[in-house]
Image 1 (cartoon, helix red, strand yellow):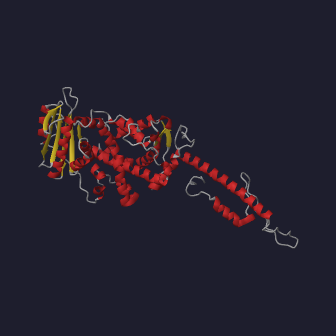
Image 2: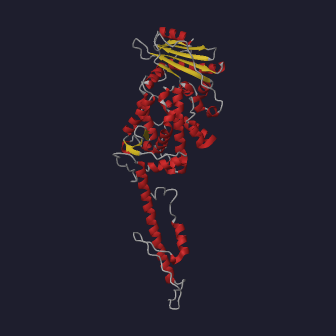
Image 3: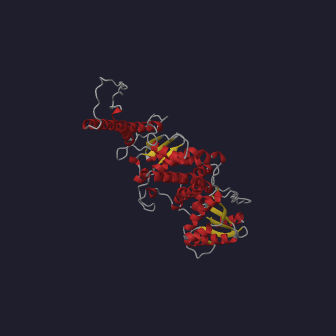
Length: 491
């Protein structure tokens, strides 16, 4: 194991050794590559019969010393190369401990195997995580997507994700209800270039031959960082025994770990420029790998939020207390996307407790809603930005305190279900700003004159004020009877 930590701590310096050898002169022993060290030199006592020494400054003596030093330098260089090879071999063995039937390591175009284990060691050292490196293996991109999908299904069992898209479709924010988990898995595989499978405790990296684009494999450092953090904090951050998370809370928790991974990868690339992303293709370009996933724009925004806004959140925590502050956040994760967007709210020791919107009854025609969720500030802002500029959308979400989305199945072959979205703001002025922005959205989406109560495109829509003018409720129903009943429920 002598070469295991050679890369950072035990690297021999030929220049330093050369100076030492020059100081020692010809007294230094000669070690030839592959030969045994010579026996200790016998020190002869000075006597009258001893042969006189050659002049130290003679040309012959200097040439002999130069030849001697050249041989020693060549030997040291050979030892240097041997230690490098031993180091790489030991790291690879360490990274595959416990693995069975390990497939051969895929070589990159330059013929050099990617050193994911070494990269992981460097990141853990920089991130100050005390853990063994990840076991890594290269598999197809499809297998990576399947591993991600299995994890996502454990986080949102019982078709929770499908129910959410049914509710978003009922509000008209996405064209139709879809199963978002396979789409998210495909997006994450391209975004991370791999995945840490908690079941097999193995880091799967995408085989370059199966990758949908070069940007996928160039994202491997981000995947390694995410995998290390998922292994370290995943069981703390995502605890299924506590029941399903709301959309708002789930996005906030994903933003913590995704932002932490993004920051770790960024700091690592500063120290190792070779690992920095090389693909400069903007994400809005149709040829970008992320845009190969046929995902509704609204859902794509939600899937990318943990990385984009999570990076800013993690950076703020790191600035406030370095990595110990980030480590502590996993025991006290953000409770909503509002805290991610405004980290100073999260860092406030007296941060306000979440407000719950209570209703006396949520049954529509005696039927329970199939969806009862909290969307949060980011989803609210995303909905408003669709038809408003950033300034008006920001003003419309600034004072949001709480929200609650309810959705019921629509009978009679309706393409969209019934939905009611109750929002609550800190004051009337904040509710006014939201009401104005949402009214503008409805006007453009349904091509109306701007009224708050209308029927268009087979939908029965109302935007009402309630809760002392601090609340706004949006009703989008498939029938007049359902709209009338929801108005009574939300009063």
